[in-house]
Length: 429
Length: 168
Image (tube, rainbow over all chains, first blue to last red):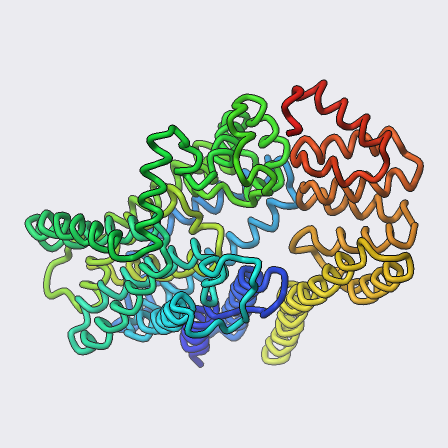
């Protein structure tokens, strides 16, 4: 009886499709919480299915792989780093300034790791479905973004007290998170279009929708990260193409900024703020959480303040930051309770210390390294997909983490983790 | 015999999975929905008469009682239950629940509610301390403190600790 793989494949596919689309309309936290809970549910059921397969003796282990499956030993090295990161999460939870809050973050980390491992496991038999399913959800979100930004339809109504753009969040819930999500999806779509000749037209169309939606989201960091990742992808193919791509990207950036009024306004504002020395405004008034996170890291350099505790620690550290740097008291969002730093690099440093940061960077580096592992013999479509996507995905994740928080939101994190898992599973041996 | 043990283990596993999904997925979703309704009811009643506040409190306590028994996903449920008890002039349970909310998230509105409950309970010194915490983070909270002498004392503490220009 072979129970494990079919059920787990279905769960992984269902999770990849449903998590980015899960919403609880008109609830206070109608976007993030349903996605987090769906991830939890997926992980619980995956564990139950695996345990059930073990009880029935239907689980297969190393050495029992079928002909077209990769053995687990080949993936072990690449799985060790995420495991080490999770082990560090356990240690930092024990040392946390608020163990209760950190336990919740640890549960989320465990769910993420379970889904990552399950995705690697089911992808050992290469399937286009695993690429297509998350892109279907992404295109739905992309189309919704375009429809909302153009004012054609607002599915959840329009609140006159909130700026229109702030309400254009598709099913993700926040324009910044939406930008990060679309950037990751567009990148994976481009890699898939290059790798899967049979589906190139459809994937090309999907990529066009996702890139248009990304521009419509007006998320500067996400667009910058996407550009950097695309250039990294071009560099994998040819350095000359990368240089030409850089020049074209610079020209396109100028054209897009000039032609799209909100981006033009933003560029003009940034130029004015830099001239006047209003650096906090340039950083969209996020200097206070940046300083607070730095202070947390300085107070807890080894184990950090604890996973998930930035928001809980923000109140006292924000007051300290304003005492040390009086100019922060003039921020227009002075009384906002920041739950995230808005920089995953700083958040990981503040919550997990220097070792946590090094593990995070090591995970990204090992992902990037997949693009440089060329095996002997013909590269399959899946192998080509992994080669083309791994380094750019790592670059995207690295740049996004400068001023966004992909690790903190299920939609973005799980999309990145899903495609990272495919890169691990499909890399050339 | 082996089959019977396997069946028993599978039944236990299935039951455990259903319980885990109910406690960690289904109920938190339901409670988020209920907490949203309770939050709007309590916020709308905030500036209204006593009767409206008691109605809102009754609604919140009724809809959130089950939610208090599952692991909280965030501060909302204990905070709203605390506010409901405060509207019913039951400061002791309100104080306990506000402190429970603060263990999950430290926000000025939670400190403000705690300060109000501490005043209701006659704990003036503790209330001043709590209002000072809230105002240090969000200076505009000072204007919401209803008692002139309490407000003046908090303002004085803020200026002494953080400087005259902390409250603009």
